[in-house]
Length: 354
Image 1 (cartoon, rainbow, N blue to C red):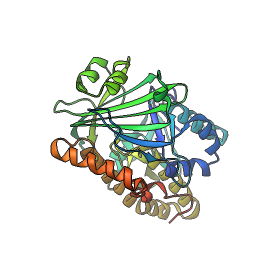
Image 2 (image 1 turned 60 degrees about the vertical axis):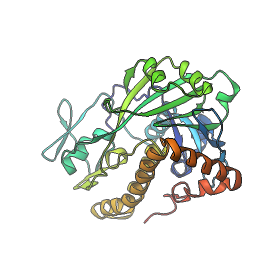
Image 3 (image 1 turned 90 degrees about the horizontal axis):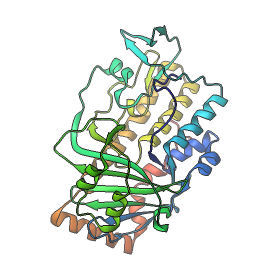
Image 4 (image 1 turned 90 degrees about the vertical axis):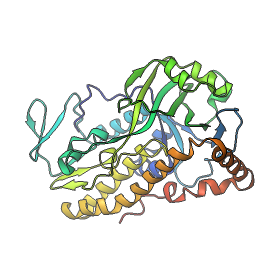
């Protein structure tokens, strides 16, 4: 494995592993390790980000299959990397991979020879461009901030994901191991911000973007001492996920906006399906089956994330109606809310290979 960063590390970011992603980790023999490194999620609580009122509570600990978990990305990355090394994978850091004219090489110039080269390099995949040509993403008109803060109050440590809804804005908070709280804030904005996770920003800009938020949410934002900002761009799902001895995986094939917590989970599913099919079929047929099996599912997940990008930011009469309906659903039939996502969470690729 070749990684261009000088070390495998992740700066200040949480990740939600939903049951569909957890099923893959369990099948790889990592279920117990990941469970020990994370926190089991109890519930999702939509909140009125203006008044601070809890709108509803939807139980996540009743979902079937692997537990819904909150982890720090660095812990998940370390767990997977350790398991890969134990399985004999050689991980080369500080190594950039280049593609040109069908030739794949590492910088400063060693050519890669392999039966299959997998591009899992995310949004800016060079292998994606090699298979599909250059594409120009478009700015969605949304800017996001990511931060981790120290937990102070018992409420900070409750194993709950809170979705704070405000007109044109929202914030997601959930706890992480070690007494920390992960925070992701998104605001609609006409001004452009650079794509990517690692652009430092002044926390005052985050607080200004959420002026007028409920006091409890404002207090959380006031405690942010270091924050990173990025613009949200939409990329099309790649038309071609594979070529001769080449394949794309995760965001390299199907970038998704962070409104359904599925980026990492879909990548885990991709990896399992690709490996399993390559074990069962000649490589060319396995790659064709891989794209055919995965593309409809990831397209549905991306569409659901795009829909959330709209509903999270409603204003005026539409917002009041949506909050009232959500509150009624939480009171009368809370199970119906999560059952809308049975197609996502209950799907286990380790048991449902094409």
